[in-house]
Length: 244
Image (cartoon, rainbow, N blue to C red; front, top):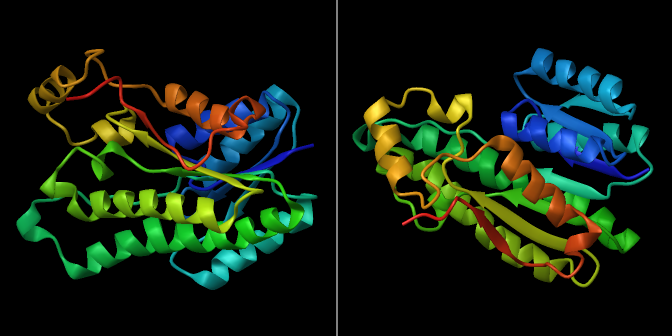
């Protein structure tokens, strides 16, 4: 049985990704920080709907000890780790003039440093086992979409692209490392606080004239993890419906 770890498992993309792996018989491990109840609900759904093993494990990405503890718990329930999906992230949108060092650093600690530490612990084991896939959730905000209100988040997502490139070198030739860069995805969290005018303006920039769906991103994530993508490595795959 293959095993996947998905950080930030209670998000819509995290949940949809978990279902994509579960329907293929993977053992699914979802990490959570604050949304324990929601994550446990998803785990029970996966068990009942797909008859697979699933676990919810606490992990604070700002604390290295917590990350080490999470990996230790994973090793207790899994024979090995076949795929790591670094999905967990924080975003504190506000006026650029209101941005603070504290929030900027917290964003980098979770989105970049935490992701690096998880990837390092898991990646080293994958390298020793001579197999594995690591997938980062970046964003078009880190490539070609610029929002001063999200400057700290955007910087973190750009950093994940660099992390992807470097890890693909560090763990070659045994571990494939790629990133998915979604554009506007119409999750409840992403649309929260946006006014209708802004939503319509952003939709007009998308060639498909609509926001994406979490399940559409999840399918791409699973594709990159699958044998169908066995020669796809060091790639930043944009999932944005075409944007200008």
